[in-house]
Image (cartoon, rainbow, N blue to C red):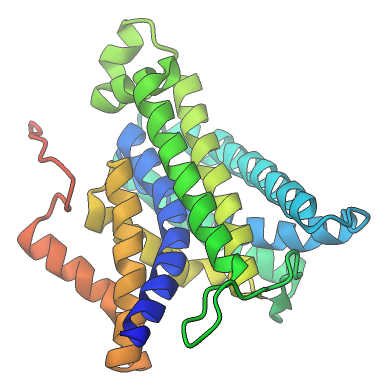
Length: 298
């Protein structure tokens, strides 16, 4: 029972990071109907930004304020990078076939990977210890303050995003653009602003996820976003691509599945379980757990 509870805690904490990254995929797909494969590299850039920000903000001695400052700085940096990519690479292809945009997204992803390797170096870096790890439980079950921080911050951001989408004018505009971008434009909705807002929210979540990941797993390197991005994409598809709560649930489910497979089966299947879940959901429910089927004219 103790092993089950321990793996449950570890899986939820790990899955919370997947959920935040998956939300960026699902939001862009929900509005523009394409997969932004460069999103995982935005996550990677945010992690490296956290290393430099922590050094520049070293004069802040309060660990909570320092963590918040680094987190906000990483979110702003990721937003700036994502909006630059959107303006240069995606906006000129707004009316192009989806395959063109998909290939461009893969190209941007490869460019950012190699840019990170050249600019930051190929050797792994250590993410700074913004908060000293402290155990909150005594006994055989380990629960530390980093895990609690990851879970609480992720849950807060997920519910905040859900509230924004369902109870604000911008959220209503996002849902209208998601339903039909041309009709939304004819109805007077500023579609460009809605798309920029979508990229802003998604990349900000990636920046926050980068800091939370760095606190939990301090090894940072230019290709760290590849596997995390793939797993987050699997989580988004598993929950229902385009569905916010589906992405959140999919990330947690994937984190739990990985943790339990590593403990009860073998660590060799850690990465395989993600793609196994993807194959399973595509075979038996292609729209995902909370996704809905949409008819398209061909």
